[in-house]
Amino acid sequence: MATNRTFTMIKPDGVENGHIGAILEKITASGFRIVAMKLTQMTKADAETFYAVHNERPFFGELVEFMTRGPIVAAILEKENAVADFRTLIGATNPADAAEGTIRQLYATSMGENAVHGSDSDENAAIEGAFHFSGREMF
Ligand code: UDP
Image (cartoon, rainbow, N blue to C red; front, side, top):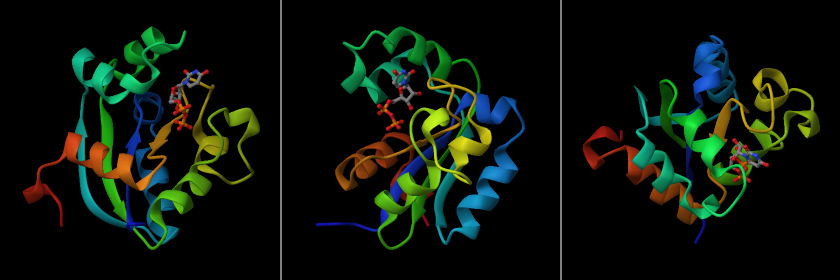
């Protein structure tokens, strides 16, 4: 069953480059309601667990290193068709392929350092949201 929530992170590059405000503005202007949000930093164990699906991939070590090097903004977002619409809003994984006006086209610098995360399924949105937030942090 499709749900109406997705999970996002403004990744360390997006925070370092001063894009928190612009990215949140784009998200809320696109009709997403913020259900939960915080500035936090992932530990190595957190990143290894969060990205466990990629642990055999050649970029895994670099990804864990990158995702733990500074704070992120984690958030749960709500909107009808949230997962698919948010993937459209962020654009392709590689910013060189991301559509005009998408968050990654505007703010990402490379395939690895691509400014934002967006869940790829309703199931993962629920798992990832629960990874970062307790029930009492969701509104
Ligand atoms: N990634 C990378 N190199 C690659 C593919 C992915 O560094 O060749 C990183 C990138 O930060 C990406 C994350 O791993 O956002 C997760 O990859 P996925 O294929 O799930 O892309 P996404 O769903 O984030 O677009």
